[in-house]
Image: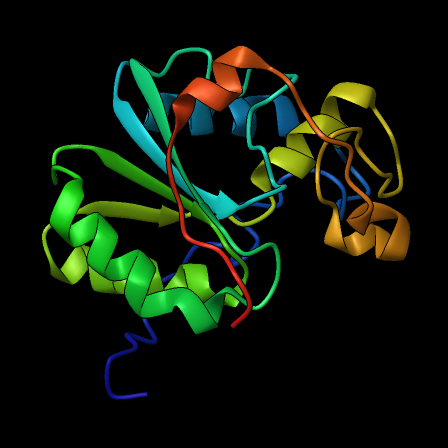
Length: 178
């Protein structure tokens, strides 16, 4: 409570969930357009679970200058936290925008990277939300070739992908049992 200004209005904690949870979905288009402004003409590094595949099959990152990916465990990435942090600090220029979709690990990682001079954002389930928005669905559905934790066991059975563009974006994989 010492750091919270009670006179200030803070933004919605669902910033990376601008679609599926809302009854009135009319603002989603504007919110996704604003998100795209964040990485417009920027070099981005996406740190994500190995089956997350943010932006694959849609135009979410079409306006990024370049995309690189660091693949991490699909679940329980915390066990590889230090490896991920060390890799970024030792190999990624801090002028790149870091987008992180790695469950609870993402929030802590974004903070630690910011402390080290990076612009890092926990984008959570933004890509899944965008997929659901594009499909105009009212409920969470599985998305082909992507890990959708919220769809239970069916969302965790992910098909292999042979997309050359996606594969060329992967700069390292930090994986294995934690």
